[in-house]
Length: 396
Image (cartoon, rainbow, N blue to C red; front, side, top):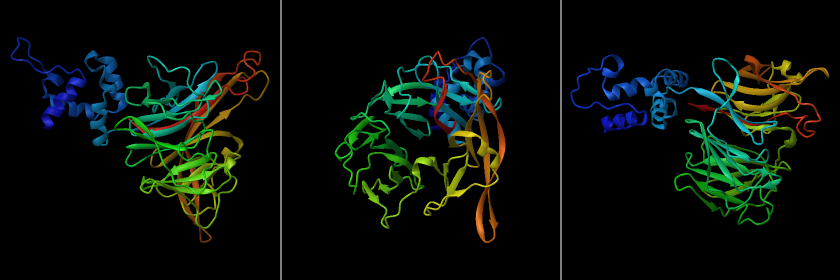
């Protein structure tokens, strides 16, 4: 069985299977058995596979092989890459970028085509092991039911089955072992529970309305995070009311004690790690708290970031978190806007009998520079030439 799987992978990589005796005898790497060749390729990093593809026509599809990536994933040979979805004026739609792990620069992905127009606001995003779903949003000011999938293996974008309802500002989570995507809210009539939520089955590529039991349908879910068991979602409404969604019971429940989150409008990019919940606060602050404690604390040791305009927070890997901020021109003659990126590690410390979390900047620098156009070019875009919509780390 393993031998047949190895031969199948070889065909995906356009490796030539051996024929009967020929007059030319192969030597070196290609004299090895096919399954051993695939095993060797599976141990290479994504960068090495790209370099190999550039040097050898025989390997030009290796970096885009889903089978090879799956084998590398099983053997722990994949590495975290930070992908960014960003709208840059004057592009008509957002584009995908990736931070080069060696050059530390944000590079726009060279795709054969993009799906235009694409929403520039109001979309929700769902990360899976193999790519990212972009769900709903506003196109020309109107909500859409469109759903796009970005494949992080071969760097392609495609439209999948649209939702049954048009939605903007919805909340979406991937649950049940990454087999289903649940989307809540974002529709105009939140009072109608029959269309307030729907679920996408990744196996059948179909959407179904979800009959959800809930004490109150919030107009908008401000923040939501998937808990560690992958079967529950912790959600917060616009007014700070706390909800817990159980996928097994298909039920939204309000917090039993009536507690609510405070100042939710100024707490963005909620992230759940193995031990703590993080968010991006105002004034360049990063906040944290334990999952079942509503008291937020500031991560200490990052005072230099409080002078920056932080625009996005994301998990880099299991040891570090990544942040993005804009460095805007300081004078009227300055026309260059820089996007900066930093990776931060965390360390708990006991101080006076109380645990604090300290952050340390492991690396920081400008990853992208952009010319700011004159206000006459576009009054709406001149003040915001970069709009970073989403950032996430994927193992590729």
